[in-house]
Length: 452
Image (tube, rainbow, N blue to C red; front, side, top):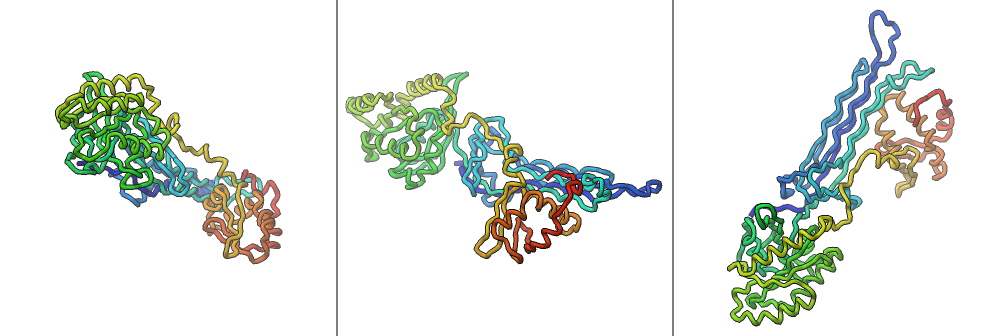
């Protein structure tokens, strides 16, 4: 049996942008050449792409950090650095991508073809040629590249099948799948034989087929995590139709009446949508029943619930063909949208535009932590710091002017900042000196023509 991995947690780090260059034109006949530093290149994003040839997440190593390349640094003569290539990771159709920190669904890879940017690259820093103003003819600073997005994600694979086989362990699901398709699941006469879901293509005729999933057997309280219940139940979520196998042979000691209620109670506890899926009852192992008339009360019981009932034997093939044709006809009449139980109407796309509101440098918070440090948080102001060369005196002066313009020092005062307090923004820390800020941050508008 092939290995099946349905959930894995990995790290992503998109490529940082390249640094802008600080260079000046130096030519024999141009004694006062101006700044000509080029921009850094954009880093590589991390893109997930569906691949119909994949069926597991086995290629992803748990805990591994997947990194895209950074952009190239800017060069002289206003030459741009090279953009970093995107890192494309391929996944099976049916993969969901979750942010492990926020438990937010980032993308639902339910189609083919489908590509989604999950970790966005950092933009390249601007070279010093961008910062020329009427009073600053030779800027001696440039921007550093923007850091690429970094996050931990959880990949969850949910099988995409038209029909899911439902029932307690050892009721004949694997045998039925092997009978109606080319799938070769491991089959033996003991509970929990099937430890991973198996997929099989059921060919109705030369032009029609459908996919059937043999879901590992459930037990009571599976929706609460008993056995491997939750891992298995979620694979049923995307099926459009359920075949509920009820063992009527008496060999397994199961009760053909109470089993139905137990399984459906677990479905309802796990998901209302799952419990609403249409079901067909397959009375399995009828080859062991010596008197077929004994099945009539069971058939009447389920037909009273308005459920289609098909007595079958996966061993002898008795009743299999009518069941398959009924499943095919029912699927043909059902809308394809029924496969999308999570309410999504298509791919979820994460783009730079959707995040711009979070990156406004004027949107930040100032809070004093348990150590008395004033911690400033906000994507825009953190990016401002990250793209400043903190070892460059001119770059630091520019950053200080930008702090004033976004209202940082005013918010620090409102938060109760006093002289000597430590202020921390990302990896930058400084001491708050009120008089110094007041003296140094009185900036005329024309001193820095760049918008914040």
